[in-house]
Amino acid sequence: MTIWLGLSRCRPSETMEVAAKWSSCFRLLLLRLPTRDRTVFTRRGVISRCNRHDHPVSLDVSRLSVLIFDVLGTVVDERGSIRAAVQGTLAEAGEAEERGDALATAWLNRLDELLSEAADGEYRPMDELNREALEHAVKASDVSLGDDALTELAAEGLRPKPWPDAAPGVGALGDRFNVVALSNTTMLALAEITRRGGLRWAFALSSELVGAYKPDPSVYRKALELMRVESGRALMVASHPWDLRAAAEQGMATAYIAREGEDDGEPVGADEFDLQAATIAELAAQLL
Image (cartoon, rainbow, N blue to C red; front, side):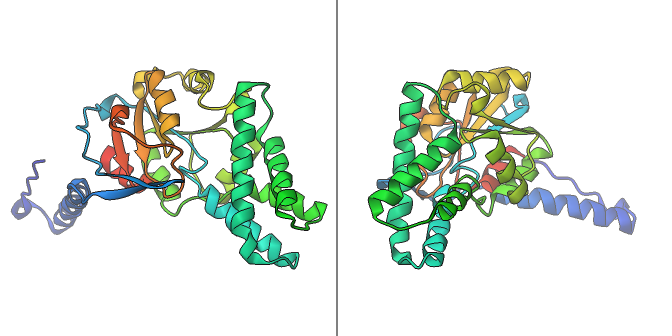
């Protein structure tokens, strides 16, 4: 990066403008400097340590026009939000709050099982699976909740809160790219997440548009088709390696966001994700 300042020939107002531009460039340069290794977590605990520069970045950012974001886990803290919602519901029902972690885990585990079954068989919408998983977990946990409490808790489970870096990161990226949400949740739930979280998407797309769940290839193809973009000009952003692998098979570039507790598998070297970052804000620093 070359910075040339001819301050001696500038009027005071011009000097301030040039200085501001130099300051902005300097901050961006600092963000791009190599950082220390950081731990990557999965549901099974610590599995590896990686630096965002471990893999040589050959991605031509100038070719990208669309960034496609996974939402659950990547943009929103699904597990943390569900855990908090469960604990709040148990407290209102007079149940022991310390049982909340176990109930939330059982709910999410059963939801994973139902999603796998739906992927291998007949498609069922996420809100239906979510309610069934919750009822199964409550029954297995021997917790007493009324129908109204179950309905409200199921609704809260479909609208988790964003990670703190999500809204500003997505907003910054939206100044240069078309930033798109592509989620396995329903269109209605995605609209709620977007509205409540202040997320600035160009488009928000649900896999229910094709009656399938990621990583089914049809989900990624539909997103590319609707955005009128070639796969080579799109970047898939996710905290789940399986999601990125499926996108890469469709010719998309990939960016891995390391979120504690949200990684469903080990990001091995063979994956060779084009970009790696700890947050969406850090990803923005690499792309802008």
